[in-house]
Length: 582
Image 1 (tube, one colour):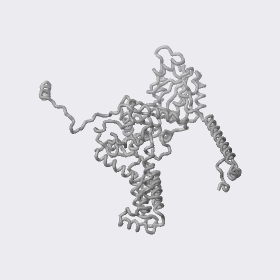
Image 2 (cartoon, rainbow, N blue to C red):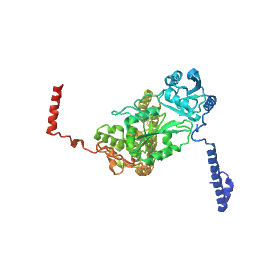
Image 3 (tube, rainbow, N blue to C red):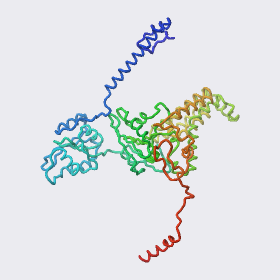
Image 4 (cartoon, rainbow, N blue to C red):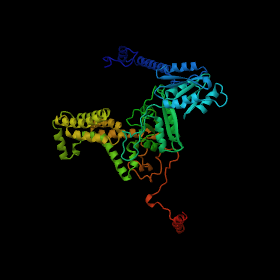
């Protein structure tokens, strides 16, 4: 078999010579050749890694940059050169002071600034500025005078690095440079167009807040601040991406969140060495614990009340500029079955709906596999009348039950993807009409049986009950169908056992993924949702300190203040006396 092979995986060894060594039982020479091959490959990989380290640029594309010169022309030349002299780079010359004795320049990027802030906060104050005493000398004195007494803006800070000026200009701020000064001013003038706060399309609710995050990280931070007005809410800003220079913020409660989890999140973010971070999905894929697992170990949401609740439980929120989806860590498996509306409705109804989610999730994974197993291997478990109906429906179908089910599942996925990508009115029409027409036409043509269509339809509807686990359910559904086609119920059992073992081995930033499903006090908010006054502690394993979040009491038996006779008399006489005095 080796001699007839047209391709050989070991480069550097001639296949014919290797075949002769095997035929002659020259295992010593063969071992030498294989060791030589491994040594050459390791050397090659080492050289490639060294070349990668040499060619890879620094983490920060702007680096620190050189310090500013006192000559304005040199500073402007450096900025134009490092900003590629782009057409949207604007350099506005300035002359200010008594008799226009000071010259400078204002540098900004067109389209990223608010023209009103520049006019009212920079240009007009500089033109009208007349020092009360003698003119300050060139240098730090003049820059401090402008920053404290002239410029009218909410954010004004001195800067002495040209690299920092480049980053601030690319972030929407304006730089003011003065000839003869080795320090400039950065004025906050951000003013690009942004989307207003609206209801998120992916997390609609019947009762509860309808506001959602936007693509502006400052607005998102403020939305969370409105929910948690605590001085312990810590916000930390990071810059990730060598070229995108994306703002990433961490938000957590200092006295609740685990310091180990916070340090681990910072460590994983600090290891990122990529060109750009365009969406929070980039960061999720880089920092998750199990990159090859179908289950996500990092949560996300675009509702401020969801993220605020996660932070209050001790989690760390990761906000990324340019996306409305905020990440949370650590994540537990049980979170996928919990919604914010569970805590805004009655506990009994919320518990019933949560149980339905668990049942729907199991149906979305195992329903097609159970149909295949029952019709192919375990017909004795099907009632006789139903068995005859299935047999009559499948009579004349040309394909095995596995191919029927696979075809219908893939057709559903195609229709679902088309409904998502197309414009909303067209997508809804394609999803509904396409499913009806294709299902009816497939049954009428005898390509599939009606029971298969019903099973896949139930599976499709059930999969929408737990949207957070939809990706994992789609993969597991196909795997279970294949296992069921080989060994029936035994294949499904082995597959389910393997999934449970995998879930039990997962961790999210040091917290077990199945935390909350063990027989502990966390059962009060898992399959059922106990009343809010009963859940007085935060989930185990997530917060490090301050695990108590409320005082336990039963509203029905809550003691009320009992007034004695003297206080009652005072309350009765008080209004009369006040009335007489009036």
